[in-house]
Amino acid sequence: SRAAATRALAYLEAARAVIHENEAELGRIDAIAGDGDHGVGMRTGIDAACAAADPSVGLSAMLTAAGDAWSEKAGGTSGALWGAMLAAVGRTLDDENVDARDAVAGAARAALDAVTSRGGATVGDKTMVDALDPYVRTLEEHLRVGDAVGAALLAAAGAASTAAEETAALRPKLGRARPLAEKSIGHPDAGATSLALIAIALARTAGQ
Ligand code: ADP
Ligand code: MG
Ligand code: MG
Image (cartoon, rainbow, N blue to C red):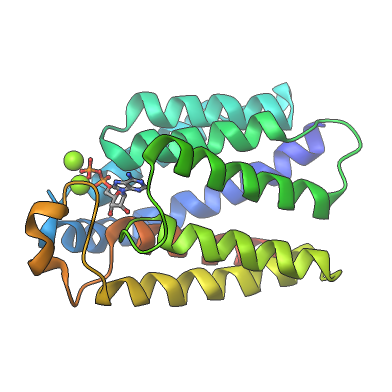
């Protein structure tokens, strides 16, 4: 529905704001062992996604178009994966009779599947999957026991943040950071960090 799409747009805008606030810091983290473009890439992608998001087409079509715009406009690994993630969420959501808890659980699982099927990363490779996997598991667990969506998003954001911080101890096994793996140790993964920031922004939006 249009109302659901308008609500979803507020979440996209919240993600956009937090990425703009942290663009320089994300670039700095990516520069330690990667190429330093993660902040610019995420900002370009979320800007394109928000620009393409038109609530009048409905929730599913809006998010699918936003995801497609993200992967088209943002280069890099994270652009392709975030675009695929958002488009997969769009394709999963049903515009009619959406039960909020079912919709959120299904969307989260679709997001994780999109990233792992495209990127091939598993937990421990020091990628965004290290934050996304505990995010999705925590969200599913809280929704299953009957928590409200807002409470579940908050718990999941906490799990993603902790997991993103814990990537500092890891050695990258995939992506551009791998050749400079030693330099990366002691610093969190850029993609896990941005994912956790977005997770916190989504939870705050739900709590408003
Ligand atoms: P690039 O590495 O192409 O410059 P970005 O800097 O925007 O792209 O994104 C880097 C982030 O992408 C990494 O910090 C990591 O979290 C994530 N990443 C890299 N490879 C993969 C992968 N195969 N699966 C999931 N995430 C990945
Ligand atoms: Mg990079
Ligand atoms: Mg790059």
